[in-house]
Length: 278
Image (cartoon, rainbow, N blue to C red; front, side, top):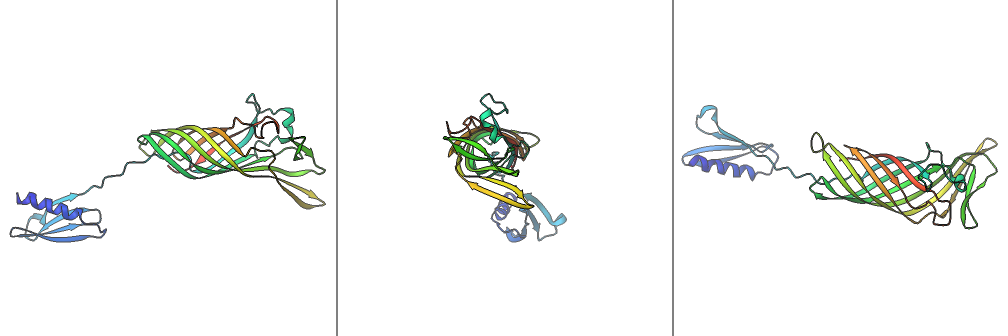
């Protein structure tokens, strides 16, 4: 009975120790004295002051209870993708009135910096809602030597008098997503297959066109800031599939790039890679 009481007392001493360094305490049970040693791993060793065999009565290790893993979605992080347009039939062939904005497919890119995320688990940490905030910068490298302009209330491209080395049309948006995400653990809790889909809404922060050309061996640059009849607010659909820290994503915007009736009917699409930590 004394031994049981003593071991309970020793456990209490170990639990009450909050320092990370080794701690020792002296206790007396009846006429016997004992030393309780608690190391930095919370391992308790009880030594008798008498000549017991090996002087060790019992060793007990306290295991800290691990906190359950929280739902961690696939939004925050960095993204890079190829930016392009499709027509109303979901084809990459643009209508004739949109030829002025035809992009170079390999040089037209979207860069997303998703700096905030909030995930809410509905079924533990396997299924939940994901939202957050991020900055989107999209640049279309135009293949034609034109300046974007509004003519008769319609966005179009007017020819320029020189050969352009670069013709970049770019825009920046502040985005907020709302997605449902399902995660399947594979080889442990931290290696998961992740499937998500939802909507992304954006507020336009700015847009501009930058043209670079050379005259008599000297490099020239023209910067033009304008609204370009772009939508101030937009929304689109996003779908994501990933494993670990790498996710493939695709975004499609069912609204035309330009405000209704103020430009050709073309719809932005982006396909790319998301890099984040989960």
